[in-house]
Image (cartoon, rainbow, N blue to C red; front, side, top):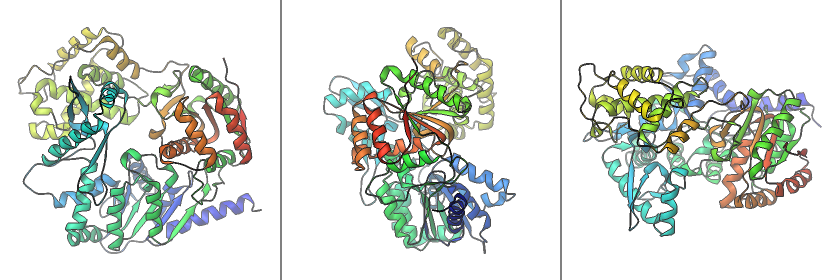
Amino acid sequence: MATLEQRRAAARDRQQRAITQPAPLYVQACPGAGKTRVIVDRHLTSTRSGHRGRAVLSFTHVACDEVVRRCRDASQPHLATFPNFVGTIDTFLWRYLVRPFLSSDRTWNRIDSWDRISATVEVWDGKMPHTLRLSDFQWSREPDAAHCRAQLLFKVRNAKSYKTLESKGLLDAAAEQAIHRRNELARQGHVTGHEARIRALRALREQRNDAIALVAGRFDEIVIDEAQDCSGLDLAILAELRDANVPLVFVCDPDQAIYEFRGAQPDRVRTFGESLGSSIDLVGNWRSSAAICALAATLRPASVTRPKDDPVGPNHAEQDGILLIPADKAQDVHALAAFNAYAETRDIPAEHRLVLSHAAAKLPSTAQNTTLTPPDNYSARAAWAVRIMASDTAPTTLRETATEILERTILRYWYTDTDTELRTVGTACESLGVERSRLRILAARMASALPSPDSTPFVDWCAAGNSYLRTIPPDPAMTRRDNSGSLRNSASAATVVQALRRGAEPTPETRIRGSVIHQVKGEEEDAVLVVVPDDARTDALVDAWFSGVHSADVAESLRVLYVAATRARRLLALALPTAHCHELADYLKTKDVACEVLTPLT
């Protein structure tokens, strides 16, 4: 049996081969394998020749920022600039495969979401209209298809409309109308990530020589990080580049593909990776304990042959097994209390604990929910944004959202709806001649000048907001064009209270951070509690977990659980329905996974 040092040496050897082996290359990396370091070291150490650079792509700005930061820390900031490219795959496609091939007969508006232009579609049910956001639809398109497909997703904000349309058999009709509306907006020049992918693939197929020359002439290697999130369109685009002999490095963990709403398809991802010919598996886990690595292996489908992660990091010798905490619907708070008490005995401070769930509504009420979303009502959104801007603990992404809401509030107050609707803040500023930097300063001043919405009657808060808005014209010389953008006390008290509650600070005793699983990919923490919901879906999930047969209806749920579990470094706890606790304990023991059923505190 290999010693720890021998296992670590083997893990480092695999990392080094992933750094030095020429493209094309498929790198399959387990959680905690150090793939970001591998990507950065590959970028830092390989010699460049000629005028071409390397493109390093990922799906989130956070991942890209991490690569940029590490280049700077290595005193090589130039590796994140021309002729190299470090950025999101959306920006890469737009810059090199979409924008150069756009016609000049209209103004093109790139947006990251239909919400940026408040795009909606109205669906009639025979008695009344239902206004639905285009962002509430899941959009997909097979690479060889002529048309898009849409599916209305059930969400809290559209629950009433969804149930009504479903009961009347109108979900397909709603999807057709959404597609029609999307096509109208696309013809007007609005380009989301979905439209960008369609156009990029079209350029590669219909203007192939020009498109390939543009990419291959600029880059001698393209690295795709978090490649498990690739949609069918993404893979088709990469296949065109592969077939044109553009060197690709495809880095992923297919078992972390949890964005099926974007079209992520793990089996296709594996097949594409294998098509590159050369491959390396990074199985040394430098993050988690042996018990956590062993549990993660049980969550993978039996149909996929993949070695168990090898715990080689500083937590390899942690003795704690997996904690299983019985938690029926009324016991989530007690489960969190039990988790906290156990973590205290292991000297894990509150700031290094994390509570996760598949939905924000399932998080214990005593956890600090950082997955905050603004309300729909215009005036309540502004109040929510002011509350977030005043918070010392709000994440940067949330503060950016709040700033943009206040920027739009200012524009809407001074200009007409026609001036601002169906436009991003940036596009509206450009068309109106407003200096964006000034607008951001005004938004920050507004946030600090207004009273706290949670300590002021909402009617008074709206009045104070309107009074202040009158003093901050985007253009100092302008007069107000319309009165429709005033803040009004038109939201129900419940809406306002809910909005403020979602933006409220945690009380001192609720310091444990809580989040939706989809928002913590790439993160890690010493102790993690995963809340498994007590509903009918859990029965099917547990059955599939035990059998290893992951049918389409539960496969993504198991991958979501896999992602959640592998965020933990030292301690992992699962809060799940009492009925499943002991049977899961028995199953894990058959797989040699150390575990313990913990009684929740009452």
